[in-house]
View (cartoon, rainbow, N blue to C red):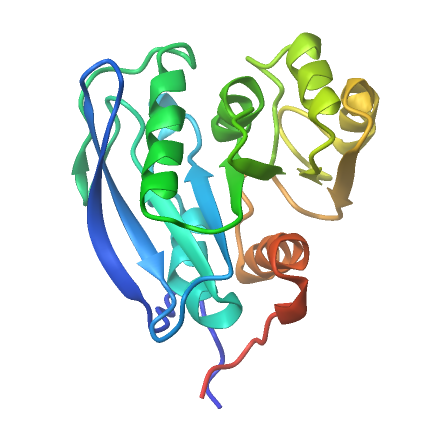
Length: 236
């Protein structure tokens, strides 16, 4: 059987979507669903910093949408936060350093709720992890999956507030991260007692390379739909 490679796109129902924020913006995105079944859980993804090149097609999030509907029966919602562009288009508004982006997170969760998407988890990467920690404490959200969290905009108070929810939080922290490495991450996440900090040997902030991507996606699926973990590396 052919090996799943970096450019592999597996079958799914893919739909271009628009999200509407409470402050009147239209955000562009895509929803990917299993091709022939209902999803068992949902990933609402929050991309890296747009002023440093992050967008809905940042490679780990794009590969999650390309693979996980087929491999793990997951729905994957990706979108550009305000002022961010990708081949899908440009979302309205302008970057606000994580402040007005609270409306973007809320719009994505409202979309998931309106479309009856099940068991919603926030999957944030870098800047997206701060959006999840600061703005993601919605009753709809069952847990957080944090890739390369810099803890730049999120405060100890945000971590304590998440701790009080009791909902699961997993942080995947690269051994060679540019901003926050595993030992410091474990210390700073002490304010969030249920946080699981997973140090990933040899990985860097951008999770470059197929081995790094597979590790991320395996860790995500192990928490969101463990029955489909570990993921296969081939597709018939």
